[in-house]
Picture: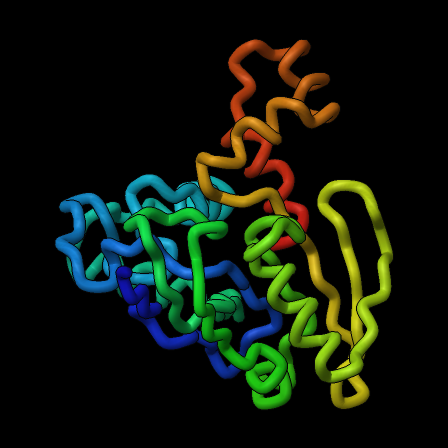
Length: 218
C-alpha cells in the first residue's frame, strides 16, 4: 500500500477572489523523481493541462522546466490575479501507484470550508472536474452536508454552476472540465465540441477547455 501525501500546502494569496480546487497531484510528486519538464508546484505535471490553458488565456510565456523560475512565474501569476489553489485531498492510500481518483482509499480531506472562512475575499470556487466519485466537488459536497450548508443549483448545463452561503456571504462554484487528459473522451461527446469541430477540423479538446476556462478565469 502506497501512502500518498499532498506535497504542497494550499497557495492562497491574501487578495484571492477565486480558488482552484482539485484532488491531489500525481504520486510521483510525493517522493518520486520528477521529470525534467515537470514543475515542482501545484498542477505541475508535464501531462497536466491547467497551466498550458492559463498560459494561452493570459499569454504568460511560462517555463515548463524543473527549476525555481518556473515556480516563481506561476506564483507571480496567482498573486497578480488573486487566484488561489487548495486541493481537497491532504493524503490517501493507494494499492496502485497511479493518479486515478477512484484509486484513493483512507482519504483525509482538507478543511476547505475553514479556508473560506479565513480568506473572506474568495467568492468563486473553480472545481477541476465534475461531481464524479472522489472528485473535488464530490468531496466538497460531503463537507457542506456535514455542516448543513445547502448547495443551490444555478445552472445544470456544462459547466454546472452552484452557490452556497457561508458566514453571510455567497460563494459560487463552477465545475469546469478536468484539465486531465483523461477527460478528453467526455469532451469528445459534448454537443458544443462536436459543433465547433464540424466547423473547424483543427479544433481540439485543448481549444474547448480554453474556451470554457476563459469565461470564468477572466
